[in-house]
Length: 237
Image (cartoon, rainbow, N blue to C red; front, side, top):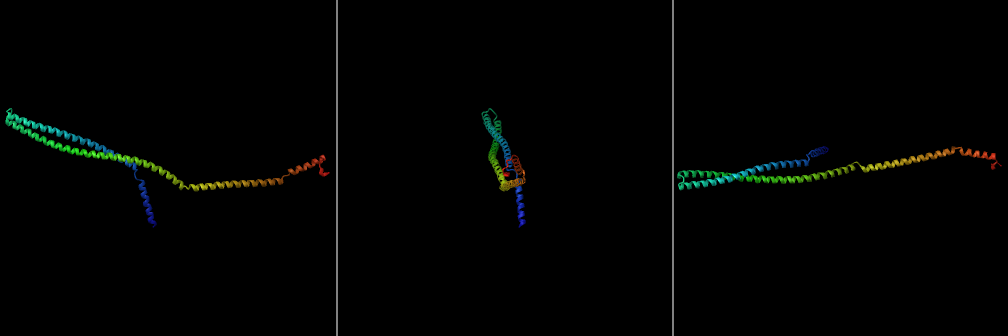
């Protein structure tokens, strides 16, 4: 049983260590935003290029439409000249036929350009959707980053406060204060004891001094002798 508990504790410690070593989520989010902005730049560049191709395809389509119309008109004009005798009829038929061949070639270019323009416009629409998605993601991530930074500040402040409170509890401040009170009370009692001892010693010394003192007895004797000399000692009469 103890072995399983020990293994569990080891696993728990390793899990906590792995969590502690995880990269900062703020840095990860910031890097993600930078990556999205790079993707946005690439998509914007691609969009500009594809739009240019779409514009070119549209211009080609219009150009070949004009050519197609021009060849058609030339064929008509040449046929009329052959019909009116302004041109050899055989020659006019040949040239009109060549104009119609050119017209058909122009028509094929029109169809090709139209297909290319359609494809490029679809690519443009797709790129624009991608760009809008990236912009939306960047905006969301930036908002989340601001929220995350605010939450980190609050959590750090809370953690610091809780840590201080935990340290206060763990350091047994109340117990320490009780010990300080006990020590102060002991010091006060010790001071009072020293005062009692000092007072007791002084009283004994006074009594001993008084008992051993000869000053008052000598003064009394000198007073008696002086009265004898002056004849004032009534006790001896």
